[in-house]
Image (spheres, one colour):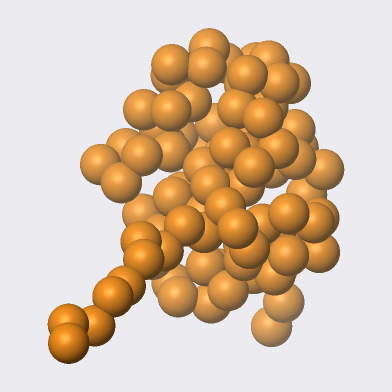
Length: 93
């Protein structure tokens, strides 16, 4: 009997602000800029990409491109998205 699997969808785990923040914190711990951008994109989708893009001051299409797996967003874009999501980047030693 073959093993049945289902496709993993991160959106099922990003329903609350606490879950979203935990996901972004975990992405920061990976030290992988592409993964951080993708995580921000996933959280933006969970919150509503159109509104996040508007609040960040970019078009929805540009935000999708910047936060895709192959995207390479500018720091200003990342900071705008984080602000739109109500997040602040903190540095700790």
